[in-house]
Amino acid sequence: MDLRLSEDQKMIREAARDFLEGECPSSFVRDLEGSSTGHDPHLWQAMAELGLMGVSFPEEYGGLGKGFLELCVLIEEMGRFRLTGPFFTTVALCGMAIIRFGTQEQKSQYLGPIAGGERIMAYAALEPGRSWDTSSCALRAEEDDGAWILNGVKIFVPYAEAADDLLVLARTGEGSENGLTLFIVDTSDPGVSLKRLQTLGPEHQYEVLFEDVSVQGNRILGAPGRGLEASNMVSQWGAAAKCAQMVGGAQRVLEMSVEYAKERVQFGKPIGTFQAVQHNCANMAVDLDSSRFISYEAIWRLEEGLEAATEVSAAKAWVSDACSRVCRLGHGVHGAIGFTMEHDMQLYSRHCKEAELAFGDADWHREQVARRIGL
Amino acid sequence: MKIFVCIKQVPDTEAKIAPDGAGIDELAVEKWILNPYDEFAVEEAVRLKEASGDIEVVAVSLGPERVKGVFQTALAMGADRGIHIVTNDPLDPAQVAEALAAAVTDDGLPQLIFTGTVAIDDCANQVHLRLAHNLGASAAINVSSFSWTDEGAEVFSEAGNGSRNRLLLKAPAVVAVTRGINKPRYPTLPNIMKAKKKEVRRIELDALETGSGSPAVEITAIEAPEEFTGGTILEGESADTVPELVDRLHNEVRIV
Image (tube, rainbow over all chains, first blue to last red; front, side, top):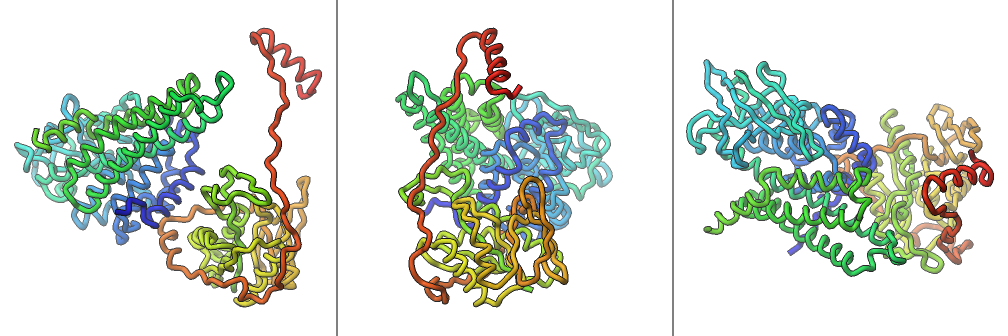
């Protein structure tokens, strides 16, 4: 059983790492977080020119023709360099949804521009007071003379202000089986209003209000009533890719912690010689290793088109807890300096916390695993 | 028109180098990279090709099997093909220049050869000029600006202290470029994939008609720099130590 990355996957990782090392220092990431939209058009264009947006897109739409696994290798590197921005929601969520569920016309209309860095999209599914199970969606879309009128609210929509379009989950009928539909809504459409949410994490999240927003029928992703299937897939892709992102961040936290433990001298010795510190770093390594393998098993199954719901939930539950432990121990190894905003540890631990809560937290996913194993 | 670019594989600048007698512990080097100055050279060659159209860019290097890694970078940046002179022998700069000259001549002497002005591992700073001598070519080093004209290579060569010389090199010319001449592109993912299909011709060093024998220059030892033990720590409350620091900086070090 060969668990190594393929040569192509290694090349993608190396190319991404070289680029992000040069273009995304800590100072840039901090500025990005503090900016008005959380989006840097110059970096976005550079990423597009490099071909990062189109890694998992078919070649006919300007992509590299690789798959979800290669996309996650890329996202892992972004986690390593704690890069935020609309890449995840545009490519891993909306782009993947259009590839799988979009009409030919929609693929032609959206994938090429996304790959070329000309279009940003954000996924809007969560609603206030409702669970991560998107089948409980309440935002309504009523058909009116060939168009659909959307009314409702979505929260935790990432980078909505920077987005050109939103992929919105709406209720078009009763029940969840055939009662949900995904719509592509232009953010400049009348009736769409945004409010920035103040969150712990570095990503820019928004509440989006839809008041009599009119959407033409050709902007239904795929077909009416297929929203449940599509949103479930998006949730799985999102959860699995978030695991890859957390693994990338945890890898860097372990490296920083080991480097610090070798250099920091207390009581006349490097703190890395103390057994407690060694054990903590060892536990971080074990958590990281296990997180990587459980994540990539889920990612591989999704890539191969296999049933993956149990594996995705198992990964998300484990990785959410494990990477939080890694960050907590990383703060401990760094001591006081690790609790300052000047140090990069807080970038990683806030990023990790945000990812931990995205697409279902650890407890929610444990419930999914329990249900699937018959409890 | 054909342009050669001489490239060298070196340890990553972030790598921790462990001196190992007369060399370094190569097994401990986690990452090998294209010599950064050679990256400028590849970029300059590719830019000329993109501006002029009918140009073939050939990357050439020598060394053991692991050297093929730098060809991936050069080809992904836009070089058209490569020539790998395979050898596990340690060579001195004269021998390297001789081998490069033989390979270049064998492939068809070009009008222009780019190199980096220095390799960051040994900083020998000789191969470019020796190569030019072997080929009977004109040469310039520390080139910070380049353009190709009907008369040859028009370059600015940095002479130190902020001054520079403007030179016209008649073809064939060896141009050794330095930092600042350009900003090397990141290879795009599509070009990285395409680079896998580009040819890298292997030539065993023994197959080239070069002089044999031991290196005339031999590295006898590599040592890590001595640890800095100087400096003074001012202990106490800042209300006392700050005035003392200012006093020392003003009266002893004389920088404020």
